[in-house]
Amino acid sequence: MRRHFLILLTVLSTAHIQADEIEWPAYGGGPGGGHYTAATQITKDNVNRLAKAWTHRSGDFRGGTQSITEGGRGAPSSSFMVTPIMVNDTLYYCTPFNRVFALDPATGIERWAFDPEVDMDIEFMTNCRGVSSWTEADASDAQCQHRIILGTLDARLIALDGKTGKKCPDFGTDGEVDLTEGLTDHGPNDYGVTSAPAIIGDLIVTGAFVLDSSRPDIPAGVVRAYDVRTGDFVWGWNPVHPDHEQLDAQGKYVAGTTNVWSTISVDAERGLVIVPTGNSSPDYYGGDRGGHLDYFSSSVVTLDAATGKVVWHYQTVHHDIWDYDVPAQPTLVDLTINGQTRPAVVQVTKMGLTFVLDRETGVPLHPIEERPVPQEGAVPGEYLSATQPIPLKPEPLHQLGISLDDAWGLTFWDKGKCREALEAITTGPIYTPPGSKGTAFYPSNLGGNNWGAPAVDPNRKIMIANTKHMAIGVKLTEQKDCPKGLPFPQNGSPYCVIMNPITSPWGVPCTAPPWATLAAVDLESGDTLWKIPLGTLKNLAPWPFYHFIDSSVEMGGPMITASGLVFIAATSDSYIQAYDIDDGTQLWRDELPTSGNAVPMSYTYRDEQYIVIAAGGHFISPLPSGDYLVAFKLESDD
Image 1 (cartoon, rainbow, N blue to C red):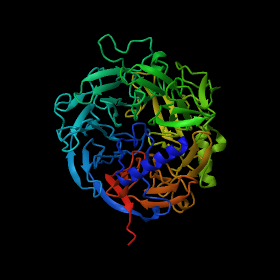
Image 2 (image 1 turned 90 degrees about the vertical axis):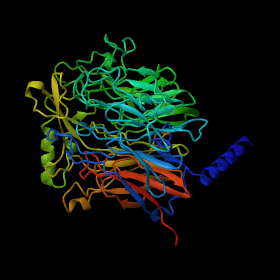
Image 3 (image 1 turned 60 degrees about the vertical axis):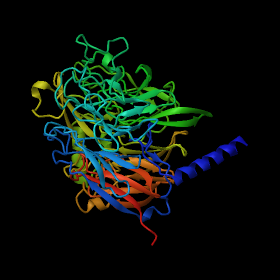
Image 4 (image 1 turned 90 degrees about the horizontal axis):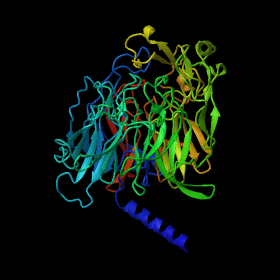
């Protein structure tokens, strides 16, 4: 009888949701991520009627270097990675230049715009993945009862009135908090916020991006909490070993600690803040870390929201010298495994490995074993972990390593060139250390999975994850022999990093396609339900070869609807697509103005469901940068 009552409540609740507007109140769709909407107006049967509803253009984009290689000197082109939020009948998003726009959800017409006046002439990276929203519990029409929270590239935290876009005068100093306070000396490109801050209760919790592999004493990766009304500092957690002090002799946060650049999740019911950490600087040489800087590196760390104290942590890579930092928002979902239902944290990684952990204890819910890994080939001064954790379930989404037999080409000629390229460097299983000869990273330091994955259906218990399959060569060179202008100089360490994708003379990856996949994983059994190639070679391979291969290089992520649709762009072509969550069948696609290297979102407004995607490229995309925020809805039956 109780079961039937719960089903009735679920039906009534769903009916209520469909009768009212369904918002997208946080970057990941909710405070625990998931990129999931309860909206069901767009279905498998009518998705082919989707058409563009409106486009908004901010004007905020720049061209530049579209590479992270030795030749990729100079500022990279802009990346439009934002996922908007929709709350209080308004769509909010930030541009790569940190401007914030409030739009009418039905038309895309601007209601207001705010410019934090970041000096983009000195900013190396151009990225803003999202803004956050907080509403006073007893909301009225008073100023700043609804606040939009923005983190900036120049390390400010700004609170805006959700109705007007004006800065909230009671927050910090003139609506701003200076995040450089408490940090060691650094340059303007070294530290900034690129992901949407987390909101839990009346707290804003934020980490920050630090410039990869620039120098060992990069500013601290401290996670800090601030009062959302006043901007007052509440607590800070600097990821040093528990036996070490978080502050140095000058009272500054100890430098060089692992940072939290990706999106933070919160569990308000349990009072938990769950953070994905990067790896300690410099990324590819750890001989000078002294051990204590590795303790929380490349980990899932859960903090007490009231105090910032560590509740538990689980390390996904020991002594990470591959830049296999934890790149994606931890996703919160309840799972029944071996007959026991537990609150879980699902964490995808750049290795294509998925860790499923108990949210309250950090204990793995699927078995994980410590496996021996290669111990030869490291540069002098480096040390290695003897083992690394490998989940037995879910199944890996990426091949774990590379050999000469993996060389591939469109023709016998370029296959031979690819084999030569692999013979010139070190190949082997995952966790083969970077060396002076050059080492093939496969998975690469871009992934596997990255910041856009995953999407999780909380009812079906299915995870959808997009995965890159592209090898990158990483070579450590003594500083005296390093070229000038490298993007990863590792100044202050014995070695710089020279990095190049392993591609044929035609620019096509040297491993067999697919180079991007989309997969569905049953999180309770750990089984992969289906896996399909993602994208096309339209902008990578020469004619006529791109007609024959269904795959491309990707960066972005998926979104799931309750009606069983998976929406994703993310590829180096310019398509957004919809797939059937049950079997991966493509049901719809449309062409965007440029590549959509972001995560889509969805909402209902005035009885219509919208799908929104940022199409503005990425600095690794072959398509040009842009500034298009594109919305789709169903065409009329008329």
